[in-house]
Amino acid sequence: MSTLDKSEVTRLAELLEAAELQARDVTKITDDYPGMDWDDAYAIQEALRGLKEGRGHKIVGLKAGLTSFAKMKQMGVTSPVFGFVADYMARPDGGDIETSQLIHPKVEAEICIVTKAPLKGPGCHVASVMAATDFVVPAVEVIDSRYRDFKFDLKSVIADNTSASRFVIGGRMRDLAELDLRTLGVVLEKNGEVVSMAAGAAVLGHPLAAVAMLANHLGARGQEIPAGTFIMTGGVTEAIAVEKGDSVAVRFQDLGTVSMRFV
Image 1 (cartoon, rainbow, N blue to C red):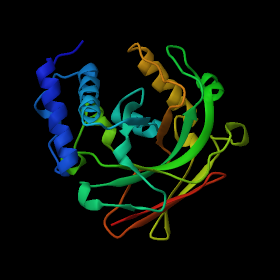
Image 2 (cartoon, rainbow, N blue to C red; image 1 turned 180 degrees about the horizontal axis):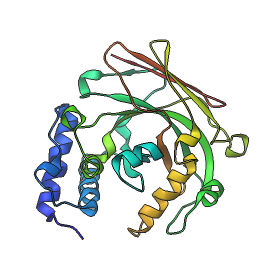
Image 3 (cartoon, rainbow, N blue to C red; image 1 turned 90 degrees about the vertical axis):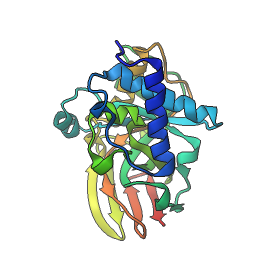
Image 4 (tube, helix red, strand yellow; image 1 turned 180 degrees about the vertical axis):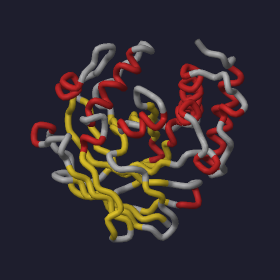
């Protein structure tokens, strides 16, 4: 049940998008709207998506956030949060990422899939996702919350499109049958030093569980995940802060390396 009217939803979407495009932080929106609920938060994200499509951008993928059990417990939630990525957020593997366009970027390693069949909730589970997976590909997401000093709550994060900012797909695509996503190891290096290590099981016990939850989340809204969708399953590693001059390389077992420079 929404508590915000349409004009408030639009105004908040415009506020958050201006913060993103001008790389200027804002205070969390629940400060001004303490009564807003989850539906309001996703309505703002949907309006944000409309603003981007209205300017001719394409939505090129979906993403899950807060997918580690520890992080969910810390935030007092029982399911991850979901967002989208747009075409202008993509950067090439080995390429440069302009820090002047970002507020306070962090990087996290992500195991991603592309679907070959639609997925629709409710009742979607890991086996349904396995059957619908075309291939697996590694990526690094650059998240950049638009909120000052990273002070936010979950509803504000959802409205802010789960801090989506940039993403880099690299390495090589592999068949799901050749991989064990639970034990797949990931090593994140910053400026040649290992700063984080994790395995796929850090994402909800199995990265594809995040996709099942996404399908069920969309199903509750009468939507589905179409065939051919690129999906980022959430950070395997914790988010690592980066600044101008840093170079990041993430090695994925069986999937190759993804790298970038912050300039």
